[in-house]
Image (cartoon, rainbow, N blue to C red; front, side, top):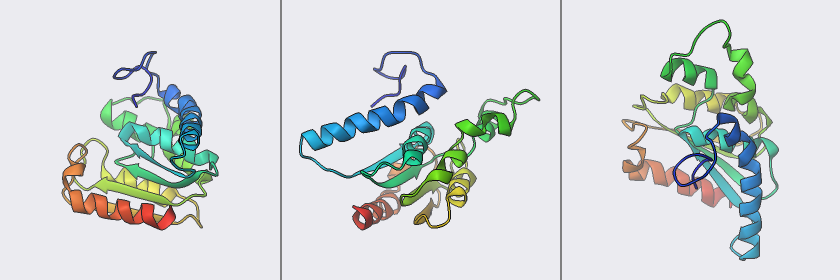
Length: 174
């Protein structure tokens, strides 16, 4: 599925749309899964920018949600804006953007979490995955998998290192 305004989707691409669209899309997908007798429990995986959708859904802790997976995600939108786009200045502060950051939303998580990140990710450095992991609340079952040598866009080519913990996580909580 494409984000609003991306790929084959209509509309304008706004960062806030990722947040406002996430839970309604999850709920509609869940209804479709039930209607078609496919499953009554779901896992969500957010990759890169999609991690914000994952955080939004996870922060609502839907009963049908069995686990949350971050792949190459970021903790702080401020860190990413200043790193990738060199957006800085007194008008833009971490506090101003905190409500849009994953590390704020994930404090509400109650479901198990798997964080997967490549150590050679130069787009979203692996420290961001570590910060997601560290920001999770006490009592939430969590696992951090750092894939040695994997970058942002080739992480799938590390098949065993990627798929093994993913399968284990899903099998444990399904």
